[in-house]
Image (cartoon, rainbow, N blue to C red; front, side, top):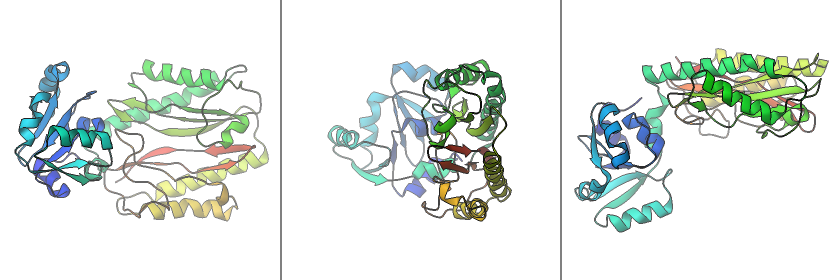
Length: 331
């Protein structure tokens, strides 16, 4: 959740000042999207530095407590601080070198995942936007069967999803949609091609609508003919793994526990080896942010008001794959 005062952020970063250059984090703190700018966090205020293109919008739309200054004033402000933290995990080496040349009196201190900690727990407004994004995404998936006709290609269906999202009032899509027909479903992050739909193809869709800058993310499987007994069984197993994990989502449970719960279902049915990715991830202004529901990630407890996905999937190379995904709001 957005820090209510600058000193809360600085206390976590353990620096006297903190420079934010990542545009997503600038949007999170200021409330507006810019294509260029910097934000300096001091003990008393958040200071957004923008050029003339964004000055008026920033003055009208920024969050309360954000001071607006011209980007030319950065050097003068930084002179007050012999040390300043920065987002080392979101800043290029060249950018840091440039700062050192421009601001030689300031020592820059590397810090990682400072704002990511705050972004995990969502505010009421963030939850509202995420629910709207989820609602539009659900409608996109509801419309998919209308487009599943012979001769439609993966690429055409992907473009149709983008058109529908805009028609439904979304900003656009959260990411390039995954649209896979037939054996292409065995590739977890398949890129749409010119393959045409054929009767009997399994169809895998992974799509998300973006609303107010916040991302939706859902996946579903569609059948164009009666599924084979194996396909029907696998779909049932994957859905069961998802439901068991979703029932266990609550503040305090760990990412490893949720993975174990879903994986137990797949292990019991003998297909755990085909589950090759994380069970899910945090979602917000970015499609992947915050916690990773992977046994390889550091063990982390879920936070109240965090928003995550639960997306078990299994893939049989050259044959087929299936993944179902839902967004879950942690209480």
